[in-house]
Each structure stands twice: as structure tokens, then as C-alpha cells.
Length: 235
Image 1 (cartoon, one colour):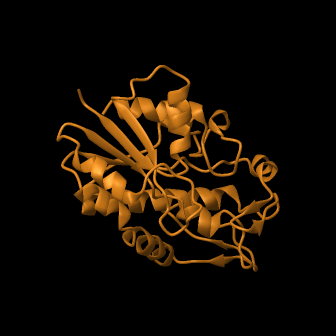
Image 2 (cartoon, rainbow, N blue to C red; image 1 turned 135 degrees about the vertical axis):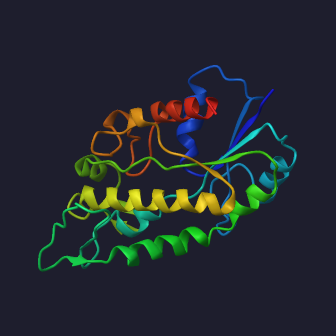
């Protein structure tokens, strides 16, 4: 029987919540939240070393899914900078420019994301530990509703958060899209496959649909997790 093992961090909560809402054979699917070795108090189920041991015992017909990378767009762009910025993601994009907005060249933004993505060594260690196919799970697209996000929490990474401080939705979406594009390209380099978010959960404009919002600023809920489970089961 083919086995699927998922390793990740906070975005695995949606998967775990989805599993808890239905009868599921845990011998087929296992979900683990990896501990952050640089933070002693970080939540998690297992260490990277323990994850590598699990992977080394999987067969060639099993599947690994990984949800570790893909949140840098929030770090650099969820909140407005002291000097607001915008950039062109593709031909035809509009720049909502004014005297106080800096227009950053696409190549500069792209290279910054590539630098962060290529510095991730944990994912490559996990892939090399096994002989089965590995899929990287894209993080959910951003939420368009700034007012909803502002009601969820008062701080983000230690910075005060209110509706006026949350970046324009179109900039957050462009940053997310760029990060997903660069990770997909990186997958080819490290020998992994890419699993894009389920289309049913995405609006025509590219944002996460409100019915899949978790009650915070960056995560999706169990309904979204169920859609991802169905994607994984179909592999």
C-alpha cells in the first residue's frame, strides 16, 4: 500500500484539521510539524534528524510532501515599508505609483527571492534521504480582505498591525506569485515536483477565497486542507 508522509510547519495545520474531520487511515497518510532547530520553544512534532530517519525507511512507491518554504512574500511585503514600493511582475501590469512609492526593478526582487530560496538546506536534506517522489506544496495565496486581516491580530513578527499598515493586496499577490514561480523553478534543480494550490480555492483575481480563510492573517482553514488532501491523494 502506497504511503504519503507530509513534513512542514504552520501550514500543515490545515491538513491536520482536515484529517481530524473525517475518518482517515493513518497508515496511509502521516503529517508531521518539523521543529525549528534554531528556536527551543518552537512548536513541532519531530526534529529534522527524525524526519530523515522516517524518509529513509520509505519505499520507492511512497510519496513525500513538504510544506516548509513559501512565506518570504509575507516577511518582505505583508506590511507597508517606510517607503512603500511596487514592481512589475509581468507585461501589462499597472504600477500604482506616486511620489512616495519606489518602483523596484523586477530583477532585484527576483534575485532577492532566489537568494532566500536557494539558501534552504533542510528541504534538500529531506529529498536526498529517500528514494521516493517528493512534492513541494505551495502556500495558500494571500487574502484580499485587509479589513479581515486587521481584525485577526495586533502584531505581525513583532510589528504593530492595523488595516492602514497592511500592504495593498495587489502587491502582496504579486510577491506571492513571484515566490511561487521561483520555487517551482528551484524544484527542478533539487529534484522535487511542484503542487500548486487547488484552483477551487482561488478567486478569479488570484486571491484565496474567503470561505477558505483561517482566523489569522496568513493561513488557510480545514476546508482548504481538505482540498489539498484530495490533491495529494490523486498523485
